[in-house]
Image (cartoon, rainbow, N blue to C red; front, side):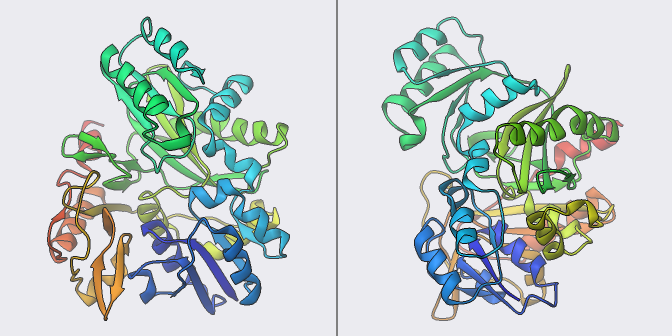
Length: 423
């Protein structure tokens, strides 16, 4: 079976490594891929958002199955284009991917169907948004409506910060056209949980829960990033919480999308806040999270390709999906200066014996050398019988990897360990 994976980061590397476990996967092509993924698949220099060239490549190379992983091509309709060419895909169609593509759509969907989320207002007029800020409770959260590389959310601690956030998004176009409309919402408090789920539009099967670490600095300080590390499972996500989420959030969301004529098939990501009044949705993503995928998929014991094909075919309920009861920790190694300004082109040295535990994100191959080519360079994942051991092993692995200016947080999983100790 000839498989195409669209994307080029650590998430895609994790997906490729898992797909390779299926003997049917004779060839895997990744567009565009990266220097690290090139060790596990055939990388082709076609951009993940170039829908026309992706489709042409898939037809010319007789692709049997495609996995569209990033948000941009999903929102742009990559799945629609490939399926129109007769190529079955894993991932939502354009009309369903809007659940991530527009925060205004997602918030209105939750309001309409009674899915718990933060109180909010939406604005397309900067003057009205600034007037609203004058009486809004602070802290408050300001979100660009569209995609912004996972960085389109600003937590404003003061009214002055909130004003500045509105101006930077709507007037200064910090996130481009994504900021034409914004959401201003209530600041929720409580533990955060990420839950990825497989769904064929009828059944929904949550994967192992995880905890992301978004801020660049230790102790959750500094600027928001695409994620500096993850652990799984999330100790705050108990069986009782999981049951409540299934009843009040997961199934109602799938039903709401069906009712809107936007059936969602693929991986639906639920970003949750466990508040004192129960779990609430912070955000939806229309795809595998990054770096959550790098701790969730290593714990998947069932075959990923079989599950994906069942999602596409609409018979997910017939597949046995099992996850290990072990724990995983992923530490992201970034370039010094990320997420603002950083240098590229630094040589990366990864011991050959640990390459199966490394997911490469921002790197390129040049004259046989692996060089840094992005802010988040790679993720190092360890799996163990308990979380403390998984964290210790992940850091030991990270210490054996070297590139000039390598930076990583030293407290990934600390909050989760504390929660386990307090149980």
